[in-house]
Amino acid sequence: KTCFDMMTKIALKAEEMNHHPEWLNVYNHLEITLTSHEKNEVTSSDFKLAQFIDSIIS
Image (tube, rainbow, N blue to C red; front, top):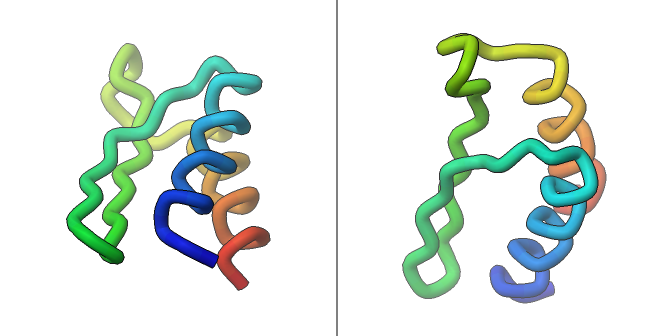
């Protein structure tokens, strides 16, 4: 799996959830920050997206 493949899957899921992470991609390194900006904290949506991300990278 390539980093771009992972980003695409995550982006599609995030769009489906209407929840958009911050991320940084440099070559094959991907850093993702999950937070709900309107609440300025971590919410259940962040946890749900994190679970999805864990499921596809494992």
